[in-house]
Length: 296
Image 1 (spheres, rainbow, N blue to C red):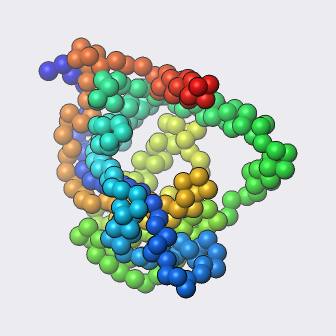
Image 2: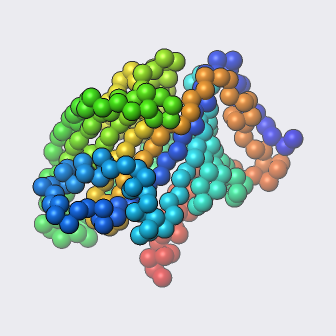
């Protein structure tokens, strides 16, 4: 069949999880003429409480169709695979081989496989840090000073509040939680966990941090904030100086506690035309492409 097995599949597979993710650009025509926002948080609360259908209709009227990226997560013990489909990249698959400490990124339309190790990740982050320092050097002195001050300040612990509201989301009865900090405001609809998924998510996050310590930024995510529950839907409101206001929505649409298909953890072989290289090579190619665009 032209495929090779990358690692032994354990007989302890547990989950197949279907998800969707998309961004809704904010159309300010939804704001009543007599409405004035007290601050950014007040603005975020207003849009987060609007029905999703209303946000979508207004965004499509102003900006056109909204792309919904669908993905499926296959969990088998300490290994996982994530399949996604988008207009930009087509079909992609990310596979974690826990035993080898490697992540594979498969671009099916381009017939390419990128392999990433902990060393690759550390080097990529080192390069990103150097690029940031280079960019900072071109900023006006006052902006450099402000950036240094912000960098030195300790991060404020995020606080989450149960609102008391309940709603059925994707077939699961959920409770609403509100999370606010200086950068963003989130609404999380979380359901009780009767299948141990929250525990598995925490375990896999810890194992990822062991393999790729440079990826661990000690930042909490939605699973941490609703510990012991499943964050079925997460709505994030962000104000961006370049792109304007956006509503990011991620949702778990289905959870099956079954063994995933073995082939989801198998890489296509070079014999069927797939080219293998390191993730570092891909990042180098992207940097060269960006440099070329800047020179043009």
